[in-house]
Length: 347
Image 1 (tube, helix red, strand yellow):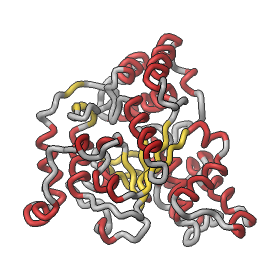
Image 2 (cartoon, helix red, strand yellow):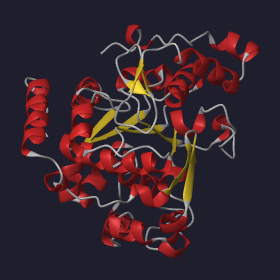
Image 3 (cartoon, one colour):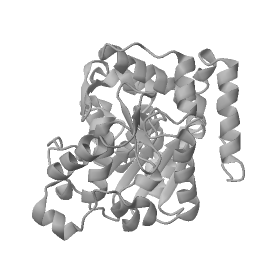
Image 4 (tube, one colour):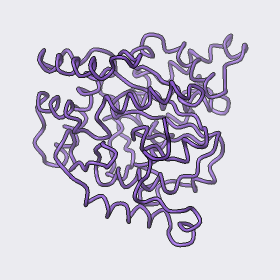
């Protein structure tokens, strides 16, 4: 897949020119102003959604952040980027990646002093468009001064991934989830935010219709998944493709796969000492959900502070059956079958 013609954000300028004329904060503010001219609509969100020219929706702030990241981010081959749609196991894969990369300095079996006891996964691995390129000074250190390997996250589609990240050859770890579970989890999350904003909650059927119509942040779901799937097929050494359900069935095997992909495989001593199992236990829903930082902590995003507990509703597989009508489930399944047919991808 080409990484040039499909990545031409209106905000892009030559790096030398940007350095002389604009800071990343100024670029973000300019991008935010340009977003308001895009087509907009209500959607599966607590915010007004704008339609990016590449075909996906997002709030003014997240699209501006994506544009600023594309214009400003200087990637390194050693960088690792976690990519997901919202509510596709983002918190879990961030936890597994961080604890795998930093297992020597922060042993997983020392849970009481592990960074996760003080910081949520979204503070340990920050979103490019929500926490790094936001027009604010959120990071404690300059991005360019962070030590290798730098860990970042994004929700943007493959076509909107910063061009520098693709060109650098840095590792991209993508995780997708069954569309019905993704939709239901997103519906729960959005309604919590809507209530906070004094907005009427969306019914699950309306939410399903909006999801199927692609009117959710960073969607349409099927385009997002297929973008990274095709990138994985074209660049298997750069893009790792995870299915949430497979990770759920056998976490240790997938942690080993993750470690090998990023160039940090577990050695014999680590295997004998149970390091993989310790990481799986540390990052389990039961352990992470029970931490005080999860119960009472908050993470700052460009859209505002979000309670960490919001990222730990239930987890698991198949919860959609408790909420979706048979008609909505059939509609989502039909779209999935049609979109994925002939791609080699099945969920």
